[in-house]
Length: 237
Image 1: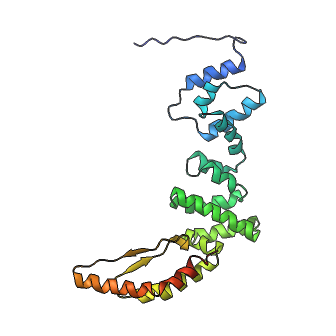
Image 2 (image 1 turned 45 degrees about the vertical axis):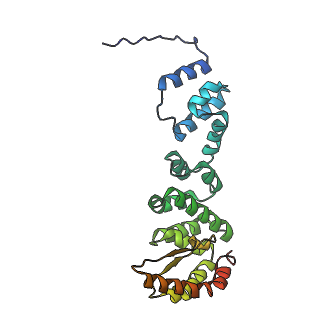
Image 3 (image 1 turned 135 degrees about the horizontal axis):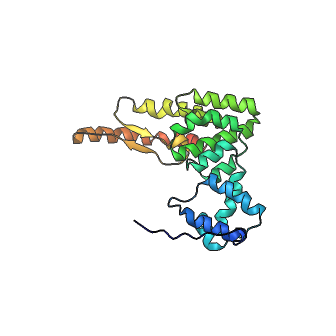
């Protein structure tokens, strides 16, 4: 049987700071402290004006700077707090979009769950920008969230709303490049949402004559594509 040494402290034997240090040490969190737990601890420390020593701050959050970020976390709405606490969204993005109506974010949850980490950040930033640009009130923000929830490609739909010219750019691209390449087995992929300058070419071949035909097709395309690139890429908002 393993022996465990226990020391009992009576009332008044420890200051609040000392008691807090003992308690945090006894917790021995292997995976660190969750944002929600730190948000519960932070007001207590501030209320009692407890000065936490650097080693204790390192145990809790890694640094004094991160400790002050807990106060920023507490400014977030509950849905955003949950996303940050579950490491589904970074604090910086959450702070940027914190004015989004909490009910709209709740409405967006199924959409957010279906996206990757980076896509989730993009969608929330775009949503925030649309709300600000169009001065959407709470009901209209929720209508937008509901619309995105009901569309099969919510991120693409939101890009079209945020950048009205995007749909026109896509139509222009399909009417020129895709039409020109139809039936050739060559695929030219533009940069995502036409943000960037790198186009990707894909094709396959089995023998030299096929490669020669595809090279000839690409040569003809190269003579026509510059005006398209100028319009699509450099003319983007």
